[in-house]
Amino acid sequence: MSSYFEEIRIPDRHIQNVFGQYDRNIKNIEKSYHVACVLRGDCMRVVGVEGNVKRAVSVIRQLTSLSENGNEISDQNVNYAVTLAKTGEEEAISELDRDKNIICHNIHGKPVKAKTLGQKRYVEAIDKNMIVFGIGPAGTGKTYLAMAKAITAFKNNEVGRIILTRPAIEAGEKLGFLPGDLQSKVDPYLRPLYDALYEIMGAEAFNKNMESGLIEVAPLAYMRGRTLDNAYIVLDEAQNTTPAQMKMFLTRIGFGSKAIITGDLSQKDLPKDTKSGLEIARKVLSKIDEIAMIEFTSDDVVRHPLVQKIVNAYEAYEKRQGANKQLPKQRN
Image (cartoon, rainbow, N blue to C red):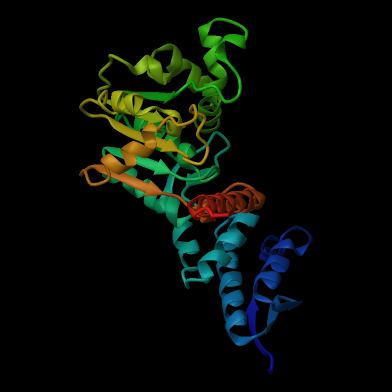
């Protein structure tokens, strides 16, 4: 089979960013498409099978565009561009990078925005609906983007307060064994919410609004008996709610409020044989107007690429386990 090649120019000032440390980005592309990339000056020649070369060149072009827009090219950018190229959607990388998609800036001035098509659908659903469920594996930005939208709405005076909550379910430890008073016992379960608030809002602004009661971070049990008007409410780790807790939470939502419910059904810490409130809600509420169900996949993982591989490995294992359980037992 004769080899095919195409050439693409990469501006000198962007070569290092596109190639990555120790050329890891280009090596990733070479491995993914079984092509060879040779750089001479600012001209790169990509050699291999025609279809693979065209896809590789398209990915490199998208990464160059990202670099020209001031982005640092990460492993996640490369892996996601390669994933999108399988379906011919790699140009969506440039669409995701547009300024119109910026939700806010964190305390370091870095823009917070959707990095995958799944995240983009999630953000758009939050804009259009009163209640949004974000369901999927760890590392897909479900909680972080919800927090960013909540803080932005709060700063723009679209809501009067932010309420962040999680069920305080023990993941291998009992609350009673933890030191301190009740607040000290539940704070570890709320730590991820605090961390996201600090990064997006800053510790000083957060503490000021917390003291004035405009931001509340509390266990889900504290929501019982309340009506939450004019608030942005985020329920995190919703896979650990019981059906009764989920119903209680959803019926707290009042006028002028918006609720985001996030969870990963593969990481339940509920007692064995206990139904998840998130799982039931997904079945019961999926056809109601103003309620959106956004399902994330491993393609939406934006943490270290190894996290995506771990998620895929566990999904494959759980499918095999499920298939084995369904097999009829053989008679002796």
